[in-house]
Amino acid sequence: MVRSMTGFGRSEMIDETKKIIVELKSVNHRYADISIKMPRKLNKYEAQIRKTLSEYIGRGKVDVYITYEDLTDSGVVVRYNKDIAAEYINYLNQMNEDFGLTEELKPTVVGRFPDVFELEDKGNDVDEEQYKCIDTVVREACEKFVEARTVEGENLKADLLSKIDDISILVARIEEAYPAIVAAYKEKLLTKVREILEEKEIDESRIAAEVTIYADKICVDEEMVRLHSHIDGVREMLSSGGEVGRKLDFIVQEMNREANTTLSKSQDAEITNIGIELKTLIEKIREQIQNLE
Image 1: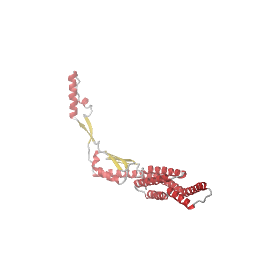
Image 2: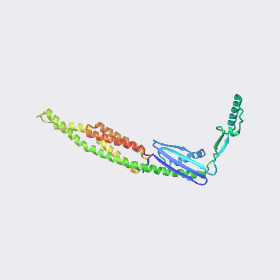
Image 3: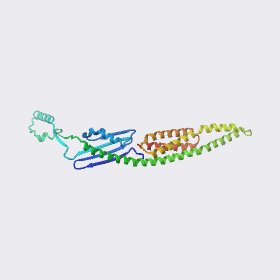
Image 4: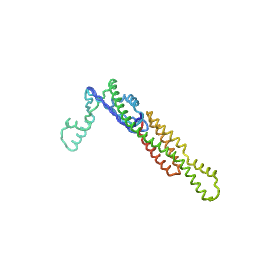
């Protein structure tokens, strides 16, 4: 199965001692770009967490949010900043002297000033047993994340296959149109030569040579063969699944190259119109492929 690069996954675990929440969300990106936001107490496990994530994520810009709450106690302590309090008091005493103020300084007054008291995380380390629970939640969130990506990827796959079928039809139309175009050119050439020569004999070999030169000039057999090959390649990749985004992007670039060559050789309004339709469809496919992992 193919997967989209956009997705979301969430999992949580709550018991009497802890609360763990893991969320993943992603958007398109050329490579795997994983950003993790988590409590500092989990920093020592970052490499392990990244290794786990890499098992589920091949490509995309992924934001990972991990919260860990210890429910056994508040997890925070109050810290008294004596130096900051001293500065406030010194300045307040200076104001008393400068302006003749007599207000009494009380701890309840000074304690209200910013940064005199701060709440600080105890920073209790997470042990290996607790990390196993975190790893479980991370994996559950990743599985839901991959599931969401897969659902979106299958929708994209169906749309891409539909567009590939349309391209195949256009290629067939071009192949069918070329013999008629050459025949029409030959008839037009014969008509002009007859008008010029009037009653004189027409050199059929010369006419045949001119028609051959014209047919070679506008021939797109090689382009059509390559387009058929690319069409089969896209279908095969979409059917095989996996991380096909980069490979498909390359193939679609080649398809666009063949469409451009076809248009440059076109000397017929019908072929030109079909070629424009072809390029439009290829561009739509290219845009969709940017969403695939």
